[in-house]
Image (cartoon, rainbow, N blue to C red):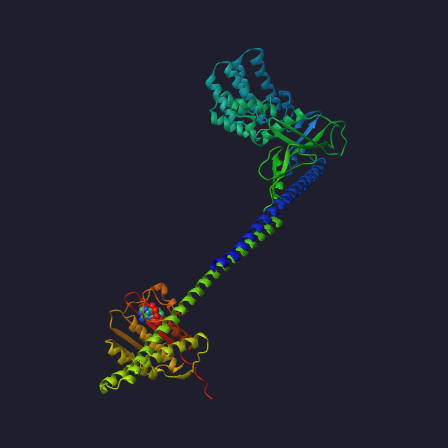
Amino acid sequence: MIAVYLLAIVLPALVLLYFGVASFQRQHQALDALLQANQRLSGEKLAAQLERQTGEAAQVLLRGDAEISTRKHPIAEYFFAMDRGRVTWPPVHTPPPASVGELLAAEPAGGRQEYAEQFQQAEIAEIRDGKLEAAVYGYRKASTIAVSEKLRALALQRVTRCLKKLGRASEAQQDLEALGSRYGDQTDLSHRPYSLLAALDLDAPAPEKAALWQEAARGHWPLSAEQLEYFAPLLGGGIDSGGAYSDHLRFARDFEEQFRYQGRLEPNTVYSFAFAANGRQYQTFYSLAERGSDDRLVGFAVNLDWVRAQVAAAGGRLVRKGWTEGREAHSTFPSLFPFWELAIAPGAGNPARGGILFQAGITALVLCLLLMGVVLLIRDLSRDANLNRMSADFVGAVSHELKTPITVIRLYGETLLEDDDFSAAQRREFYQIITRESDRLGQLIEKVLAFSKIDRGEKQYHLRVADMAPVVSRTVETYEPYLKRRGYSLEAQLAPALPHVSFDADAISQALVNLLDNAVKYSGESMSIAVRSYSSGGSAVLEVEDYGIGIPREEQEKVFERFYRACNAVPKGGYGLGLYQVRHTMDAHHGKVELESELRRGSRFRLIFPAAEMEPQT
Ligand code: ADP
């Protein structure tokens, strides 16, 4: 039977599941294709938008005649100015060496004259006359005259030169140190900073040189690209491992190398130029400078970090061209950024995908519910089957029980009819047997009728509000002789009065008898039983306790079901109806049954009746 049910439900469910999964897969594929197309489309849109944005920014940035070196914008990384094919800013080339005369010309009057004379004399002594001692003296004096630091440093540099020629190395060293520390930021006639020259001349330790290189690469002295390249190996640095300033210079130098004019340039027009050099790629914009000669250009390289951030904000990534990974869709830029592509990952949180996930969730939920239904059905079916079996057992057992007294009654009846020779005592005994057996018969029929009434929902309770104490004592008194006869001792602690509750006297009495019956049946070796009544929190409580076999914990709830008998119940003791009736009675009284039981220790059943609601006084 169960197998048929299973087939009828599980098979269609499996078929449904199969079609569900198949259609889910198809939808998934279609959606994937759609997603990819969508990705590409949104990538292309984004690429075009970025080009437009950078172009517009370039228009604004390259307009106006502000000094190019002062311009700043997040979109622009490296600004530059170019004049007749040579980058003039940032300084790619080193300007020609300055002369002392030029320096003096820039000097305010002050000590200029005095310095000029002193310096010239020293130079004559050094170069023309070869009088190095006198030259040292002269240069040293010049270095103390109140002129610019640059000129004083120059004189000091000459002092060190002469000292070296004289072979007075340690003195030369002292002066070099003074030159480096006091005039470190000044540059000599060839535009070289004294701190670098001094460090190299004194052969400073490597970490010191490396620190100087870092400063140079970050732009501490506005060195030219040529100078940086010259100093890099000497200081142990590399033009490629510098700071922002050296990056800027490297760009400018590469740009100068790669840039080619493409025809005649129009004023007020922005041009773009992309190039790669030394493993780096740049996208630049430039236009004719508004000031200066026709050939002067200003421009900048696009800051790729800025572009990356824009792309990331739109859910994509900027990647090198030809580079692919996973399920990303790639879109190229229409005309700019020839070295890069936009990669858009399959959109997380895409509404369509959300929809499909929702559908899948619903399908799974429906299947789960279906499965749960099947499980419940099977449980119900097996419970029904159990009940049917128990009910059949009951009918069988009752019929059997009915037959026994009837047979006995008929037997003794016939015996009495057929034979007159029995003594009065014998006859009396036979009548007693017939009476006892018909009593048993009556009780049994009573039981069956009571159950069937309850089962068909026809049982009626006649409730009235009163103290149930008298009913309880009467029932216990009636029952006690039966117990005593069977050798049990009954400990009765009955409250003389109980809270008023609403109850049906017959039903209560029957429930109490059922509990006492059970106490006897399941007492095992124990021969004592307790019955109590008391009030608790306004409720009336009846309690029956035995010290017998107890009920396994896992069956304590089930024993109240009809026909249920615990696994340790005596085999020929009953039909599993007594407690069912007790629970039914208590439900009808809006009360409850409590059970405390421990295996081989005994059981305590407690019937709790709620206090009756007081009728309002009229
Ligand atoms: P039964 O006619 O089998 O006694 P009941 O409905 O009265 O039917 O009880 C159901 C089952 O509960 C019993 O078969 C027995 O296993 C268990 N039971 C009831 N009362 C006790 C008790 N006092 N001690 C141990 N087991 C009990």
